[in-house]
Amino acid sequence: MFNPVLRGLAAAAFVASAALPAWAETVTDTMGRTVDVPDDPQRIVLGFYYEDYMAVAGPDGIDRLAGISRGPWEGWRNLQWKNYVSAMPKIADLPDVGDTGDGTFSLESVVASRPDLVLLASWQYKALGEIADRIEAAGIPVVVLDYNAQTVEKHVESTLLLGKILNREDRAEQLAGEYEDAVAAVLSRLSDIPAEDRPRIYVELGRKGKDVYDNSYSGTQWGAVIDQLGAENIANGQVENYGPLSAEYVLSQDPQVVLLAGSGWMGQDQAILMGPNVDETTTHERMRPYMDRPGWDELEAVKNGRVFAVYHGGNRTLYDYAFLQFLAQAIYPEIFADLDPQAALDRFFDTYMPVPMVGTYMTRLPVGQDG
Image 1 (cartoon, one colour):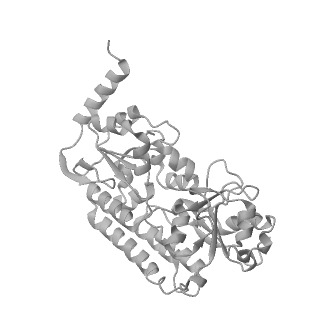
Image 2 (cartoon, helix red, strand yellow):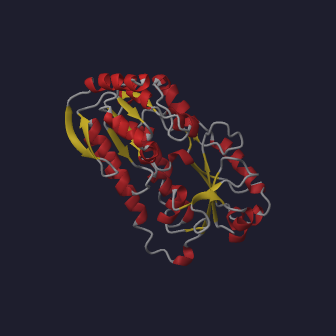
Image 3 (cartoon, one colour):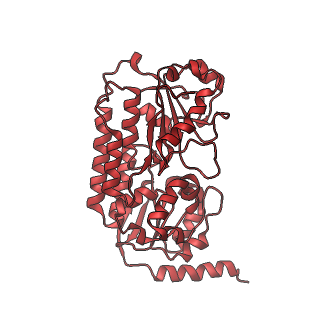
């Protein structure tokens, strides 16, 4: 007896595969998988890396999308989502194929989108397991990108891979080259900094307000950036990847620099607001209550006015070198005094993105406004 769901999937897969353009070449994705991809695909299901995709794809990149995994964009980066929908309303009408994070990712929705190929983040591909195999069995190639690795190598590899797939190789090579050069320019100055001049840093996700100590990071996210810059991350050895540190531990470590990561999450009304169209004064208003935590007025970072905030949604992107510059300047102000990370961010958006750079992505809490 035939299963009607499987029979429907088989029929949809036949229609999808029959509509695929001629195969053009074989690429190797960031997981070392060889994938046959079509020439100049015009119907793409995009799982993640929305801004990176648009940077490489260029002005008509949105027209190639046949579906998206909407949850991570609308939920994790809500202000960013709204900003892009305002500029390109058709994004809100794109079919949603579901989210690997909450188990709603749908094979049926992918097939129904009739894509030429599917682009996934490495963490999405791993989460899907056999579903990814079934997508490919339906005749739809799956290519895995990886900006989450937070290495220059994977950033460059993912960018050049996108460029090859989208026939935007010149644009991708320019983006990859600029990224490599910007990171190298920062790291080249670090070797002569003595150990005693490498300060203690505390990073906290500013998502839940001052009354809750939220995630800090070790070896990933902002923790990886601190390691890259050779500073002392007080979360190292205390959490695995991410997790909250106790108030007592933070106070005992007396960090010399505090970094709060803000964004525009859905349903987090105490969060430090940052990102598109957020005024800097609003970000500062959300930062100040953290300074009223018990004992924080005695922290070296607070007393010396070295409390900073960065846009959480911008890390692990093609423009995250601007945050590397910002943190380098925050940690080693004299060595990196000549950098202008905001100008770098502005130039990236002016050059590559379909929306303007308007909002607060990096800031320092003004001295005298810490309570």
